[in-house]
Amino acid sequence: MKLWRPANTITVKALALIWQDDALLLCDVYDDSGRVTGMRPLGGTVEFGEPWRDALQREFLEELGARISLLDSHFVMENIYEHHGVTGHEVVFFCHAHFVDSSFYQKESLAFVESDETAGIAKWVSLDELAARRLELYPAGLKERLATRDASGTAGRILS
Image (cartoon, rainbow, N blue to C red; front, side, top):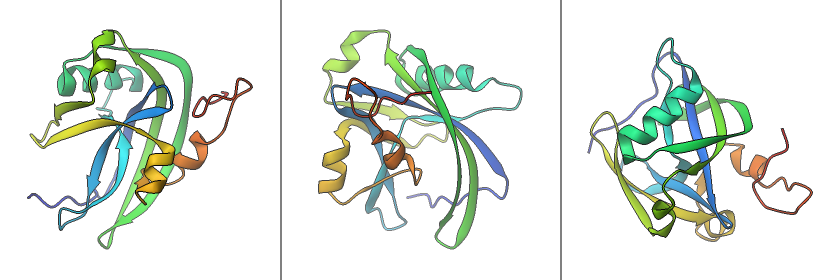
């Protein structure tokens, strides 16, 4: 298993918030021993000169072979964190999105391969299930942000 450490730079990321009822599409986050410590939405790093919306669509096409439609509802969070004694710093664009091909919603899990050839599995997980499994939602603060309810009472829908 390859050990991951944050870069000594500010990283810009774009992550998609794709919902199926009350479940969000998430992938596992592991510690050095291979234990799952939490989950995060799918997406990736924004490349120099690339708009974050383009990066998000590129990441889904590269990793899942899926086209996504981005909604207008988005927000940005700054995340300064520590991972195994190394400080990380990222600015993350979050955007609500939908799969263009509805067959992706029929799958319990979705296999993907990241640019560094790390394989992963994305699953539909509710915020209540995360809490019951005592798993974190990364980045820190995202769970509280998603707990906000809009006027229709739908969990995870953010008013911009």
